[in-house]
Image (tube, rainbow, N blue to C red; front, top):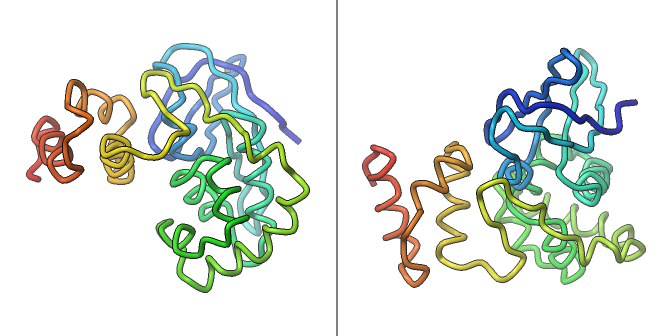
Length: 204
């Protein structure tokens, strides 16, 4: 079992990172939170990993923190929840936010994750609550330090929401950071997105 990788970051997208570890390139699936924490290409990075073996493939997933990996383990243990859906949850919310949503039985919040309907949200909360109640350390888990994109555990602001929206569209953390650079925190999300998309050469 590969528990962690420490190497040079060769490639990075919103969902995949490639690390050069002693001349071997490892491709790992990652969450949006981990993607935002990655350093610039060519620099060293450490990811805590989990290997999943399916019927026809072996996949490796990487996480910026041990707590995120632990939450991934808890999520994929839920019936009918696979690695991709677990990463979608971890891309939408930090570990501590997921803990709070589950303990508060916030079905609406969980349903906000792309691909998670109401029934799936209810099942996630039902099956996770007992497990997470015994794992209080996840309640105070830190958001991974960002390479260039600052992340906060505080309540989301319009700028945070615009950033999350751009990441969900497939823009890289670096592109998102540059597109939103210098804009006022007090602007509306719609205005921030329109301005950012113009910078990125797209119509709002």
